[in-house]
Image (tube, rainbow, N blue to C red; front, side, top):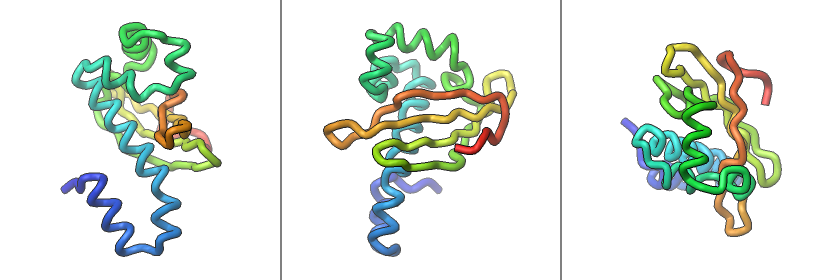
Amino acid sequence: MKLPAALFLCILTITLPSSFARAEEPVDTAQSIIQSQIDAFLNDDAKTAYSFASPTIRGKFPSESAFFDMVKKGYAPVYRPGNFAFGRSKVAGDTVVQEVLISGPDGKDWTALYQLVKQPDGSYKINGVHMVRAAPGPEI
């Protein structure tokens, strides 16, 4: 059974020392964002998928359709994952790197290294995804 992210964070806050819960928060947030973007890809929802892109990515792909086309063509395992699971993560300042182990639509295994950056409003946005043809990938 999957717990909603808000309920999970409440349980963590109640059961774990507050310093530990705060340390995990950027990772939980990053995973939630990645999950939401993958869900948007699976639903062909370009607008929602694009909403998770950082200003840097939006600068390179200034429209939802350009962004969506780029993902379809260059990131098929992310666009149409068979299965995926979160792997290792690393927090460095305002950046979260999250490993996602993915089975692509062709059945081949990939590691997607997502980089999320904290925005001035406190939210996190996806700033890039590096695909590695292996699972698990290199050290993060």
